[in-house]
Amino acid sequence: MYYRVFDCWRFVAAMLVMAYHFLYSAPYGAETGTEFLRRLLPLLDMFFMISGFFIATRYADQIRSAADYRDFMRRRVARLYPLHFIVTMFFAAVALAALLAGADHYPFARELAALPQHLLALHALGTTSGLALNYVSWSVSAEFFSYALFPLILVMFRWKGLRGLVLMLAIWVAALEYASWRGVFPSGHWTSADTLGAYRAFADFVMGAIIAVLVGRRSIDIRSHWPGLMLFAAAVATMIDQTTPYLTLALLATSLTATALAETARPASTGVLARLMPFTRVAFGIYLWHPVMEFLFLTVVWDRWLGQLDIVDFYVYWTVPIAATVAIAMLSDRYLERRFGNLIAGPRRASSPKPAGAASA
Image 1 (cartoon, one colour):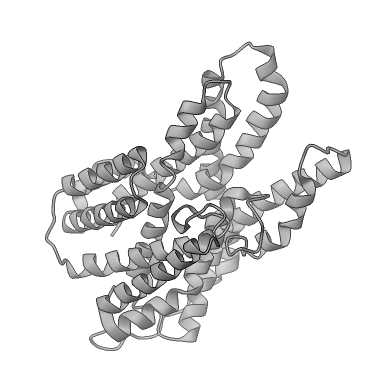
Image 2 (tube, one colour):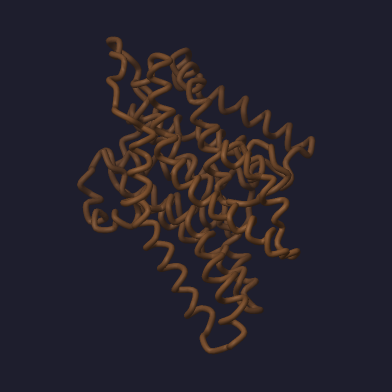
């Protein structure tokens, strides 16, 4: 089963995050655009929900032993870590060059100090005082945190089924609410956390696992894509209107559920999207590569040279780093990430046999 709609949504979300960050180099007057796109940042929660859905759908029945879990973690590291490492080392090299050049305006001390946490993918657990170095990769750290806690999801599901997962989510959110009330999160609330984003992400991840159970059981027979699309549009509307984040999260979860139900019922219904898959499948690469393109094309070329010459409009020029990001993400996926990932993953071992009647998520 290939969820093409989810891939398209992840691609659009990655492109919007990239556009949001690129607009910070725009001339005066871009504040309206950046404020609009900033309101759409809860789409990151959709990333983690989809991740939880995919992981639960694929691995819930495969992990039955410590060896299975070790194999699972190795393959997830193989999927995410190579590109995270490459981009992190790029910015570490930039910080080191700034240090050697005596560029006092560049926060090289803070950047280099965060390198160990980034290499260990611990920087979304509160081990750094703020975003630094490979700043967007807090989501990679959050993903690894969710993978590490995935056995808890399996235990709760095998103990109490769907009710166990709902109970787990309720307890986790209650703890996040308490932490928010105590002022733990620098952003003010767990729903907008990034430096402590791992704890926010795990709530979304558990929700994704709940969605996987609902879709696997086909609790509701939805065959049309319109309910999912309308619910997704409603979620976006609540982001723009800045209503309560709980409503946004609820609408995102229900839209993903409705969409997955429709696509599993009629897999051929999204066949027209197959042509987009070479682009949509590199959403992760776009998300991680775009700060590199931002630094090269905007911080270096535009801010220091081209923008001062006033020979090209910014919104014409910014198509160059956007196109470069998509291109490098596709090349990276084909020639870098897969090759390094295969070295980390190693040969695939057979999973432990499933007992008869094993519950599926």
